[in-house]
Length: 100
Image (cartoon, rainbow, N blue to C red; front, side, top):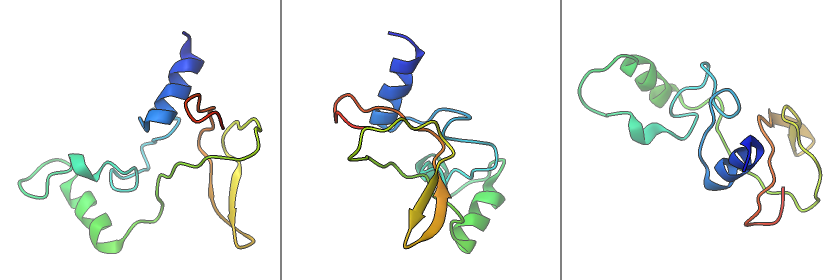
């Protein structure tokens, strides 16, 4: 198995890849990683996490499946009600689901 298999399997499992799914401008809460942020005690970055909790999420990491088998390269627009609401960071084939 090569790196493409690892990418596809990580997408199916919901594991995040640095630079593909997550970037330095994503907060842990926006990346669905809030469970790793303690709610008590002090740590580096706590104030930034608390600010996001108070102000709300600007973006959210989400997973999609497609009915059509099309190749996705990333950075495709995500449309909802005739408006662009986000961008795809990564697209991979799900072998267990047999769909992109």
